[in-house]
Image (cartoon, rainbow, N blue to C red; front, side, top):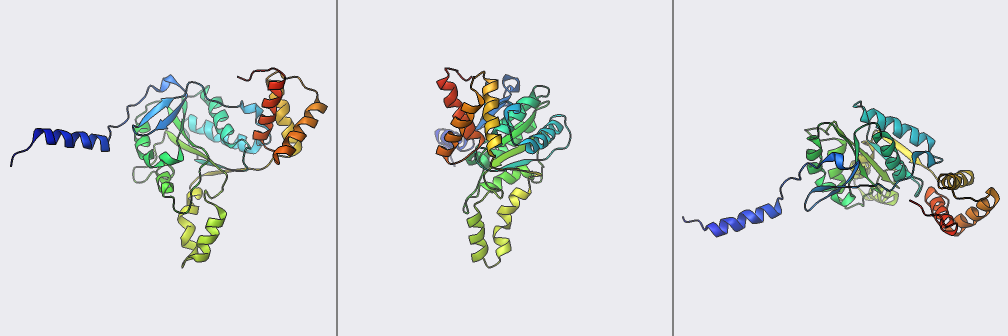
Length: 282
């Protein structure tokens, strides 16, 4: 039976497109943070990460101290836990991860890699790539993580949390943020419990995903004093002059128009204030 060389070439090229070559190990010294992309697989250096200084994060002292200690342990090569930061919107969950990375990476070769939820199916390939790194240690960061009832991406996350038969690389840890403690809507949990033949088994697999995080750090809405302290801290750090009475009056009016108080709302007010004062924010 004869074989057409052109046909074999086309088949080989098609297979390469379906199964692209493994990503090359990047020069990790090029940056302290990277973005993971697929199609093709690659780690994109981030020259400058947008983040808030650790000492400007107000009202989350317990979460800050716990996550900082865990990250320092990991960076030194000691045992450490994956962490789930959950709770109120705009209260500094993702800001805390980035701020702690900046703080710890000043003295240790710790890299931050942001992984999008929709790219979770590729996490096995990413772990294979990071496993080959000799000196660096990596915090995988998945921001705003949550799953719907028909979402299968959560199964890929178990490769990071449990590692499967090969085990998670000892130089990789996962930090994720979510508005939901169990990573899926409460009404979805209740609906599945109410309609399933075996209610406890209906949601156990998905709910147990959050149990695989060794650290659960809760973030709760701030009070008015904390809200004002956040803004005062931003003003002092960026040399924006405003007296306490005016700041209090304007900030309270600002948060009332937004219908909430949070670190995000505090920063939005401060951004407006800095603009009115003619101050550029770097």
